[in-house]
Image (cartoon, rainbow, N blue to C red; front, side):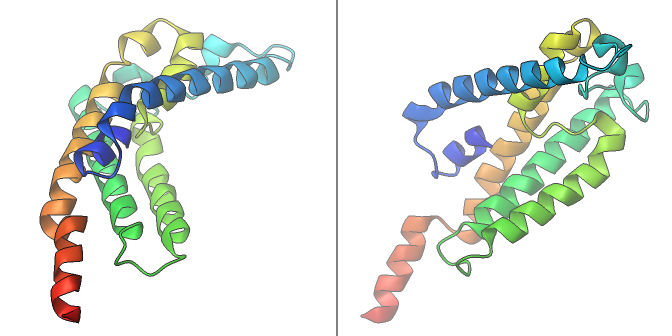
Length: 177
């Protein structure tokens, strides 16, 4: 999302790398806490469980192919960011963004959990993958590349369709003059 927000002009480029680093650190800490909790159950095997890692092929809950997983993650991320950009646009009704964003994320999960276990966030994918290792790590590239591609697409398309904030402000000034 952060890359797409930067492309759309809603997030400062200078803050992008530190923000992504903070997200990844937070995801690893979160996965560590969940691993501590999950391994407290006698007989629980973190690696065998998959620990909600993302994957394609044999690592996909529905055994979907790599290309399908890529398209799913890119499209779901683009759609999600498009909704975020629209719901938080200054022209959108105030107070409804959390509803639109939450319902959109729910729909994305309903669609993509069977395909990839739903990423739409590279940091979310990285945390659990580091604890599971093996195939989860070797497939992690897709769960970085596809969401970034999707986010960049939305970051370009939304302003092209809806107009940039500066253009909206110029129209508002002309209308009041």
